[in-house]
Image (cartoon, rainbow, N blue to C red; front, side, top):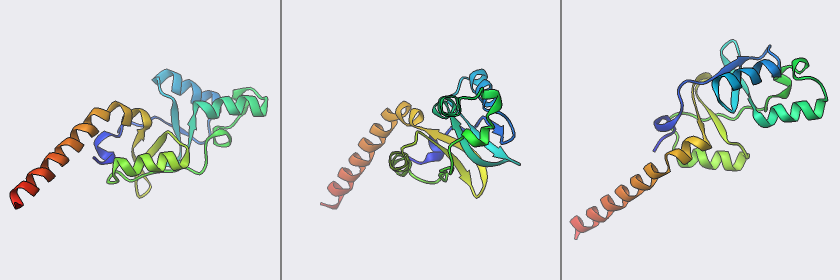
Length: 143
C-alpha cells in the first residue's frame, strides 16, 4: 500500500505570518491537531498541539505574541505519494513524528498521520493475507 492510498488530500494550512493563537484557532475550528505552515503556497513547517503548549510554556508570552514560524517544528519532514506506507512508518518512527506532509517536488498534495495508518490497519492485514495467498498459489502452480 502506498502513501497516496490513505493520505488526507485536504490539508489545513496557515501562512507563516500569523500568530500561534491564529493557527491554534484554525486547528480548533477544523477539529485537527496540526496545521502546515506555508509561505507563498510552499510548505515550510508544521505546528502541532505540542508545539503550541511548548510555545506558551517556554516563552511565557501570550500566544498572540508568538509568531507561528518561531513555534512550528523545523525542519519539515515530508514524503512522496508513491512511497510505501511501511517506509512512511519507518520515517515517522525514526524522526519521532506523527504527521508527514505529502509533497511532489514542492507542491503539497496531502498529509499522512499515525492516525491514518491505525485507521487502515485492517487493510494492511488483508493486503498481507492476499500477498501470502498469491505467493502460495504461485508456488503450488510451479510444483
